Image 1: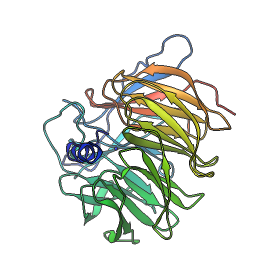
Image 2: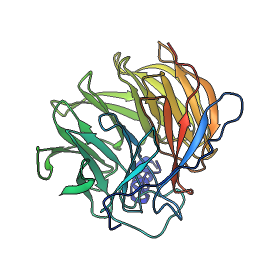
Image 3: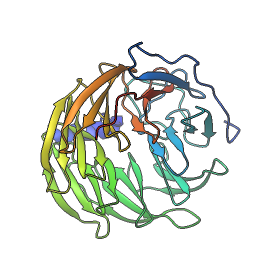
Length: 353
């Protein structure tokens, strides 16, 4: 999930050449607005955010109606209400007192919801942990085969898929109660990097670090298609599931649009910034969100019916920002590592039809 962790990026480069279960924090009162009707930005501080948090993956949990914020070295998974901006804390993950800009390999950095639970990775223990969203407590833990990066829940099979760069994608079954059980590991040449579930087509997509995007069949767990994405170093993925467009972030500042329905055909590409990683898509607006960690801004792109991206505008967010997600109310959410907070961006650009 990049410049992922220090261990995974070194692997990629070698391949390539709290006492309580919950608490509340309060956002800053004044959103930033350029005065031209453009996107407004509101800061949401997190408990224990100083001196900074090595964020990575963000995820909107539509069933829970919360933004899942794995808060790295703080040892907490934060659940943010997109309307009230209240923050509920799930403690119990590994902690660290130190923060290094650009690093995000401490504590929990990826989470997803599914089957009435939340699944979150923990770096130091090399585990995936099960959280009860009703009690805000960790209720089960499973040791993983390799160092975890992304975790995603596959609804059609009731499975948890975890990327482990240099190892593959570990697939675990998620029982109604108790700890997840490891089933198999899917090898991914030169990866895996990023993970997107396409429920409509029964596929999971991931990248190699060196310019390929893979389509894996959920049922057979076999790699069924390989597409060249044109990246020197390919990182984040985002999906327009309804229309079948898959977007790939190239680390050096390019977004590539592939057609997952027609063999990964190139539908468009656009440049933005110099340091890209995670990207996110809003099916509500047909907008793609692209943080540039080097420039400290968020690019907002409209996606046409043929898959081509067009820049609608940018908004200043935070330096070294990588993580981003979109909720179902017209907001993008962006990490602010040095500030130890997340930023809610009110996307005021018109939806693309």
